Image (cartoon, rainbow, N blue to C red):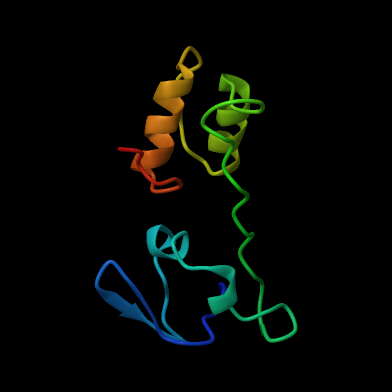
Length: 99
């Protein structure tokens, strides 16, 4: 069994609740407070997503973004730029698009 919600939540106009199978795209957008804790869970829990690297400053380089993308099974070309990797992560809905 995957992670289980403890209450009803709405993501992009769709309601999910305890017992529902939440698609990965929606699950990424639901805060940790809405999921059952380990002591409340009755099955194997999906790994929690790690925080994305910053978009500027220390820790925002291409290797940090490449590692983040790989951790979340986002395929990027070996010669992809940092901007390409960020765009791929945005397309996978791992991070919000910046305007």
